[in-house]
Image 1 (cartoon, rainbow, N blue to C red):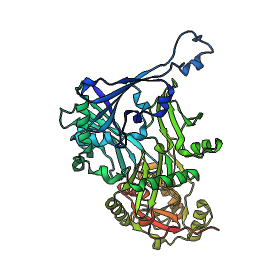
Image 2: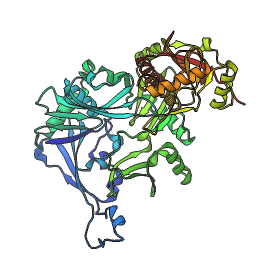
Image 3: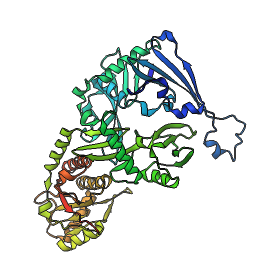
Image 4: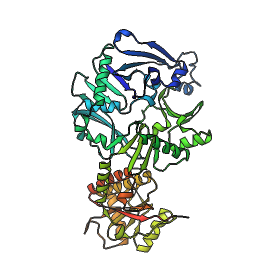
Length: 519
């Protein structure tokens, strides 16, 4: 049997707290008292959804008379709540998970319990997302049971939030997977369900995962009781009220299912459909409806049958990076994470090893002018080649690629961007790594670049002398070297792209450009 199990956090003291109040008010939950003979306290809830005409009926209705067909979509689901070892659990069937009060659930229960239960050489699947405001989510599945290194993940940059594989003990089950909730294939009766939950709680509380999966703690979640959590939440709410976008983004907890039709942003009884949820669409909704309390915003995903698939509060979807004293925190997937200090120090140290060409290039400071204006001025002043916005059309593709912004006769390929947010820097880092890879692998791209060099400097040969160097020129008003002033998660991203440039056979350097204050 396959079971889907959720663990309540340790603040929960009653079954009813685990049910979303909205569902308790809606009248479509039927409560069932738990049989005493099971040996553990429990109660159940039957969730029924009212029958609705499928969305496709409106499309077909003008030519097909379906009014009397009785075609509706209705679902029955069940939630079994139980108390074991002084902790509350929810076992859900069908769409029962949608009626749970997500704010009362223990984050990472399924992940940690699974990691502690897994045979480290029998992992089959890892889902991850990069630790940045521009999120890249991926699900990696291998066809044979494998150790973590077979998944080709960058554990400095990729945050693993779900795993699946075979438990080291078949007494627990034959397959286990987990993120916040846990899914397990096992032989289990209702009478033995309490014992199974006790086993999983023991696995959740263990620390065995640190041996084979130590990278999980590179970014550590703060305990809900940590006083910094309330302070960080307050800062995040302020940023939303000020409609800020710097170092903030919206990211779904996992990649949307293919059958998701769209989303609703909701506040009380007011709701608006959107194709995608972004900070901009959320802020537009808040402005249009005078929303002052962002905590009460909800976002729903729904399928073509109008069935709600998932729902979140706004703060469950917000990604935000904040600095607080000496620590760096990121809000991700309903939790605040603190970057491990040793890990931060190691990343900063690795970044400091990149060649710093700030003094060598001595680029002039930038004021209020646009980057394009700045690049043209520097190219004219230094007699450099300006390739800003001179994109190359990739053959048999719609993609156009900018080789770099500026080129020096010493074969420095300079990419220029302001340090205004992580999204902008992510674009900068990718620009160089994509261009480096194409120069190595695409003959037409390389020949195009060599022709441009010959037109500017007839005697310059790309492959003669020192290797070309991609230079990340970052415009900033932050004092100090870039390896200290970059946003931490941007530093991680830069290291990843720098390695890609080096793998393509080029050198990598950084250069700080002074951003002047504008009155």
